[in-house]
Length: 148
Image (cartoon, rainbow, N blue to C red):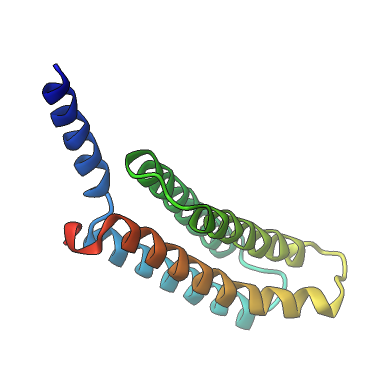
């Protein structure tokens, strides 16, 4: 009975780990490029922002955040991650959300402090850096060679 349970657990674990494939990592990278592209486009076009471009920009960012969160959660179920990795994943999510909130505030018609614009120009780079570090720690924890 124990052998059968271990086999099922191994299949479950391997299935979750294979959920993050190089293609999905490339997809995450492409999503960030799309987010940046539309962000730069919106920034250059000035206010009032094109509603379709703005909403597309926000929805792609939200979808990327949700995908990353679900992926890290599933990997944590399969092979428990260390405290530092989980803390970095939470910090990454917070920075990602902060980037989205500052972008939303900049879309409002009311004048915003110049510091908010500076924060929103820096935060996306911090988001990409934090995401890359989180993925590096997560993939090294589960063994990146098993995923390729």
